[in-house]
Amino acid sequence: MTATSTAPKTAWHIEGEAVTSCNCAWGCPCQFNALPTTGFCEALVALDIERGHFGDTPLDGVRYAEVFHWDGPVHEGNGWRRVIHDGGSTPDQRAAIEALTDGTQGHGYFEIYSAMAPNALEPAVAPIELTYDHEKRQARIGIPGLAESTIEPIRNPVTGEEQRARIDLPNGFEYRVAEMGDSVHWRTSAGEHLAMEHEHTYAQFIRFDWDSDGAVR
Image 1: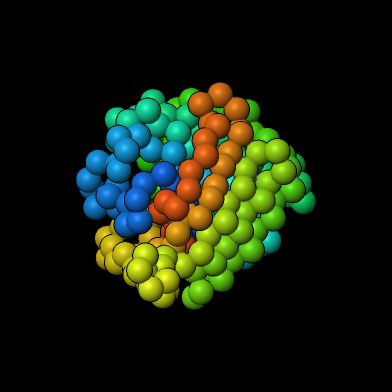
Image 2 (image 1 turned 120 degrees about the vertical axis):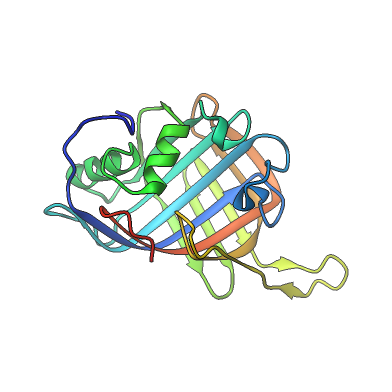
């Protein structure tokens, strides 16, 4: 399905933490409506839903990841994506996540990325290791055979001192404030167009609070 589907919508709400590694330089020009650093976009996103539901399906504690690739800027579309479910999720929870990420259930975050990445590979199921500290800008994503990322704070290249920077987007469709970090090393091997490897690129930590009414809190 795509974001243009006429599937009936279900009331839902999710809140938690999202950790992202992408191939842009620190700061990620895409956050400011500029072209990507290298002319194309690739990303690994892991989401930890602390509290949530999709209709009657509870989503508390559900984790999932997505891998994305675009040959050019995201807004030019025709991208590739794949959902990776954590092995601990139930079939109903996986169906809920797929309905959300297919963009049929509302909210700009899901609608935009599904529309811009219509080439969706079959979802995968694997154990997802996700540890993060929002304040310290540290994280690790580990998905055996599919993806991994190590994120640390940005450091001054001369002194090695940690440098803290945030992006504040009062009207953002994804977040209001993001903490930036350094994706020291990350790689994926998630299928066609979704194999990538990068070092010292952009990382992002956000608190998300989204629902079927399109809210971003």
